[in-house]
View 1: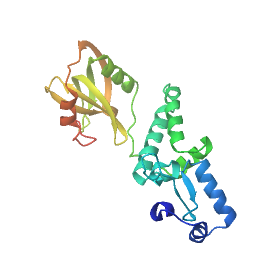
View 2: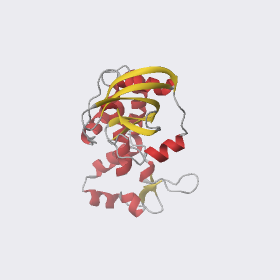
View 3: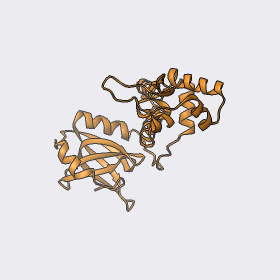
View 4: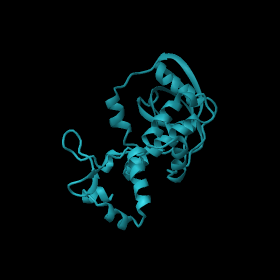
Length: 230
């Protein structure tokens, strides 16, 4: 932060501002360069440390380094992605498929495996309370989305009454801590959004799913509250 705000800072000023010894500052600078991949160089003419200049004349700022240099928004997104993928892999056959993605995220954190896990423990993103999914609903819904097949669903409404409806599944999204199914309801002849935890039974039909352009789906459903089931 000092280098980013001042451009170039002498060794003595760094020691004073940080309140550390000469040996500690040397170790910290070495750690930032070798472990965090921060492009910090010593400028002899200005007798101080600064970020190196990139090929197009831009200064390699703190935002371009890894790990601790992430902004609040970036670290929130990164940790949320890490915890979501980690949670999806727990107790399922998806774990081995998600592991390479988790390793990529770990690399973005710029730390070793142990240090990355410690970072995730100390910087946590607590998701909203999740409603449990029952049985094989998620797998069958996801398969129907990909296979483009109509479904007969038994869905529990807000009044607690379970009702059957025939839908063409269009996409699945994860929002607000739960999975949602966006579909075309054939009874209502309209788009609808169904929280997956409210689906009590799934029957795959032979009929092909109705196709709806993605731009129409996004315009109609992406403005809906998370828990609303049209």
